Image 1 (cartoon, chains in turn yellow, brown):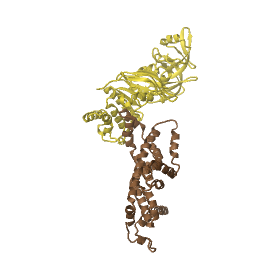
Image 2 (cartoon, chains in turn blue, orange):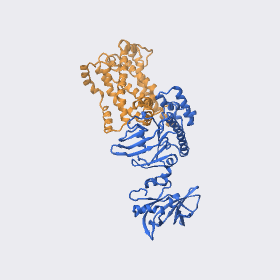
Image 3 (spheres, chains in turn red, green):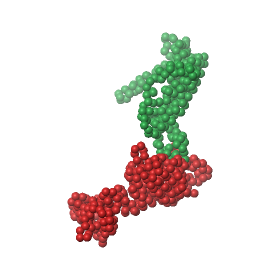
Image 4 (cartoon, helix red, strand yellow):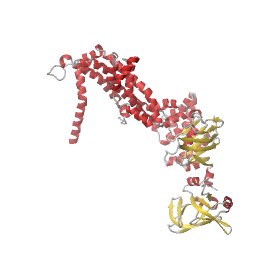
Amino acid sequence: MIVLAKVFIQAVHKHFGTVRALDGVDLEIENGKFVVLLGPSGCGKTTLLRCISGLEQVTSGAIRFNDMEVTHLQPRNRDIAMVFQSYAVWPHMKVRDNIAYPMKIKKFSKEEIQKRLQETAELLSISELLDRYPAQLSGGQRQRVAVARAIVLEPAVLLMDEPLSNLDALLRVTMRSELKKLQQKIGTTTVYVTHDQVEAMTMGDKIAVMKSGVIHQIDTPDQIYLRPANTFIAGFIGSPQMNFVDVEISVQEGKMKLVSKDFTLPCPEMMRSIVEEGGYDRLILGIRPENIHHGQQESFIPISGTIYFSERLGAETIIHLGFEEGRIVIRIPGDEILEDGSRHTFYINPERICLFDPQTQKLI
Amino acid sequence: MIKKIAILVVCVLIFAWFVGPVFMIVIASLTPSTEYYKMDQILPRSLTLNHLESLFVRLKGWEATMNSVQVALWSILISFLIGLPAAYVLARYVFKGKNLLRIIVLMTRSFPVLIIAVPLITVYLRIGLNDTILGVSLAHTSMILPFIVIITSGILSGISVEYEEAGMVFGLSRFGSFLRITLPLALPGLAASAIYAFILSWNEVFVAAVLTLVNRTLPAHILNTAMTSPDYFKFAAGTVMAVPAMIFIFFTRKYLMSMWGISLK
């Protein structure tokens, strides 16, 4: 029986001496959901995972699985399983012993151990590898063994610490979808740590973006992409990075305009009221490279500049469009050959414009 | 070509330098007393085991050997019992004064263990540990312990902490994880340091001689008996001391080499 656990993390602080690795984290994870902790190095995501696992003790705060308070429980009493970044597959045991060991410790019957061993090995396509030692396996195979070992006990919460980072790029792409499908099949509540935004966007039901020990936004991948809560998240997600332009608000003849040092754009209608209510005179305008198009469409806002440089990637073209002082990056599909130095007009989709408060860096 | 001959000559010289004396000692120990002092021959015509037999049986060399073995084993046991936990802490934890601790441990090796022999015997006489296996073991432990702590902490550091953490996540306590996962992985290195500790204790002469009277270890015993005997007894004693250690090291050389980071096929 799988006991699906809802994970509650409340006001968790973790200090290492004077270093505040976690500075007040609140997070709720629904039953059976796949939540990704995403952030740059040092943001506290691994520390948070280790606190959930019990390998680190929190300095203050509480962690619950459903109704059970686990904050001060040893890892072995928390009904969790973990896949480590280095896999931590025990080198002195064969693959079958590695997977069977958690069951052996919990004193499962021989038949039960055999049954689960076979099932899990088949699920992860490692049935032929059962009698090998970890040293005889490739990295990808060792990773599957680590995952098999983690799911064999049907834990309430499954924790993964950057399990794909030690794999080569091609294997990473395959394993991404395999892990996600596996989780969907077995339905265990999963917390997944990564610094790779592509992994987060493709695998997570929800993403918690972290920086400096705090969660900045918890949302679905779509929402994080479309409505990032602040400039940090906006810049962290999406490649090439979102364009940020400092603009001043000016109202002329009843029309609100966003004035940067290089160009002036009319303020999209839908944003006007928010800008007025907030009483802003300066803002940061954010627009993703892929939301600036080559072709004109009804509400689109034209912007003209000189081609500084184009990168032809085959399936798409990255264009660096220059102005008097600054540059913006544009991403268009297909292979476009545009000459350096030529003048072109592109069209910004106003629905995709994000405006940020320059003082708080937050989305308005 | 010349280079090859030169290397060969150097090798032969080195070989002779090391093996020569050993060869001499062993031959001398097997030379009958009648032939030993003859001036006109170098190598004996016949070999005898008389001297070795005298040493072992009449002069109670066998008991002394057994004492040596017991002392060595006890020393290893106590050193590991105290040293392994200390090594674990040094390998796994970060705390204030960690480097200082390491240096202090190292520093206790900086003086010869002999200087504690006389103070120790006076204490032992008071508490009744004089002339006991345990007494000598404790003294040898003080000599071996720093070595064990430093070497085994290095070995334990080399074993990724994630193996232990995986053990802890999947059902073991921290101690259980250490016992069932780290220890088996550390075993080759630990075995090698135990072997070296054995030899350190086995060869130790002076403290053993000071601390014991009747229950002597083999080196101390030889100091008593063979040193006042004719030459061939001395050589027999030398053989008895050196050969077992040499054979022991020969058969375990793979482990010792791995401890120092060299791998032999």
